[in-house]
Image 1 (cartoon, rainbow, N blue to C red):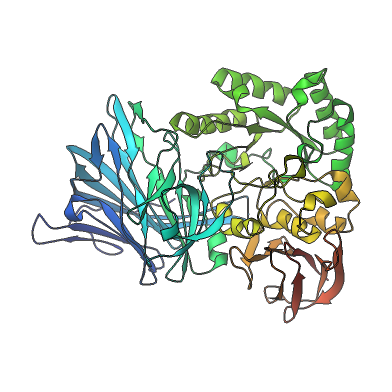
Image 2: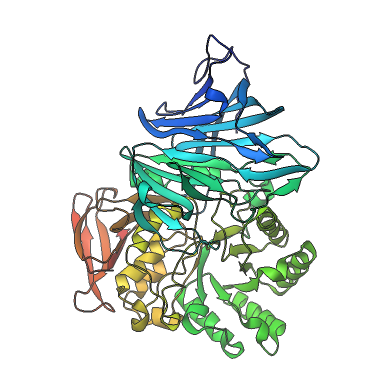
Length: 612
């Protein structure tokens, strides 16, 4: 990371400008431009209120929106005066697990010194080509009380369309389309995506560390943060760093899904973690969705199935602690699995690792028997104490070379950049909801919205792809298989029974799909709530995956993203007569050709393309 020299008001010029009005009673402004000059954020203290507004391509994205929090009974963000600022520049690139191989982290920044209610605080501004982030930082003060967060987003464009989820503390609710004026007084979860003046805009927060997680609600036309799990606030003697309030901006859906702004706003990992060979993305079999509790007697069979599928991992979920010899059976299974090239993950309850001593003891015991990862379930609502628990759990798991999957978890805030052993987390209503034994069924639009909302800010453990006919509940086989490609998760825990995978006529394609990608494109015909069509590359191979909502549709997909051919395409489309079958095709194709997708209601399509 490269940071430029600082400058003090009013002597700065260039990409960040400060405008001092003639009278001290008038507003001061700090303007920050993105490296490409197309995105701008302007912070000012007009009327004694600290706000920022955002434009992109000369069009308004955010109208003046507050930056603030309430501490010790005072509103920091009101009665403010900008005193000075310094500017900086970030130019960084780092490897990432997910929809692409590398993250670009280029931004212009400002750190603004602000006087408010007898305190001097700092406001940070980060402006990148893909969006804007702001936050406050407060100096340490004995027994400081954080009362409430008072930041927000005022979307431009009047009454924009948006795709949002009503708030659940486990982040497992459906996404649906609405408009700003229809949100009412309900609590909503982040991220939220809106269409503002022709731009795709996703709102969320980054680097939620030593601070409570936030939901949002509509107040006077503005989306305002709410510390839902800390209604009474907290006391601290430490410096306070507000999470970044993030506005991702994209001209098209490919730019949107490829944003790494949330991850960029977190610190890089240690050198040891950045180079760790034991952190290995991969696909996993998993028994809970298929059969419920694991059986002590058939663990080697599950390892054998996993090996036959070529998957890297097998997850033993809740119920193993009730076995007759739980620890001995875990150790035996891990030894058997290792001999077959399979790593074992194990489910635990967050109560099992609630304290440092408990975490260290349990993680060491798992590592000693050869377990490679832990799925940690049912954390409490993410107040300040529990957001710190996430970080401590990641850190102590890393000390024992354990990878982590957080379940029932708060949304990602990019901390997986700092702790890359956290390969994924749930924080999404996935296939665990779409299951007959609990009489639960996902609405058809949900799957087509997720890639452009929840998955914009980080990987999600959807537990995809179930082929049992009774569990389809309207979905087609192609729709289910496409979930595996579209719902990014570097630890890709598969929901279906391995025996149904091995018997499926699409087994060759299923076995080839990787857990991480080098490149992702969103193709024509994609629209949240209607359909998603992606092309994803791993190495020299390309995959096309499509998911449809509740209306049948035909789409034409151009293959111009391919390099010069010829290529061999194996496609698995919908059988129009029955959901549990494919229309399979295998043919040579070239980049100047197109293919037609004939998708059923709740249908899909998957193709594997290899250069001949």
